[in-house]
Image (cartoon, rainbow, N blue to C red; front, side, top):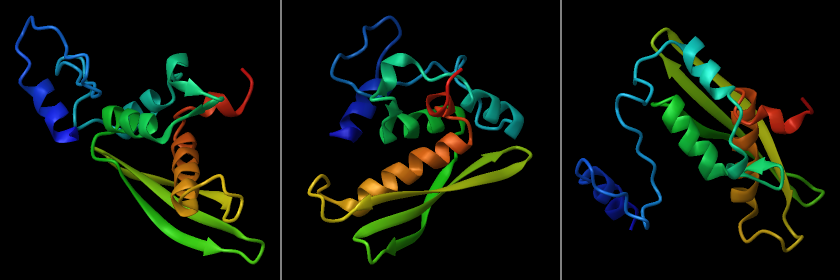
Length: 150
């Protein structure tokens, strides 16, 4: 289904209306950041305030963070560095996000912890990964304004 949605957007002809079922945003090439940009520009863009329409419960969903990284920092990558099961019934995931620019690359790591037996999560490791990913993104400035008062 996702591939079909992308194909629909790519085949859109000039002047056509956007397909209402498409959930992918494809910026016009003249308005999207280029693939090769200095880290300073990428980090400046990641520090922009996230639109209120993307914020739920004072947080950004992982998929919105993913899309914003892909838009402002094309070529970024993420990896789980460690998964730690604790005796207190929690799992902690250490996640690293790496952003690449024309002048190098920089990474940020963070952790996310959830309890295994609270019944709230179907997959506690994935939930901890989501928290860690969002926090690592915040260390680049993405949604950082949600963690403090202006």
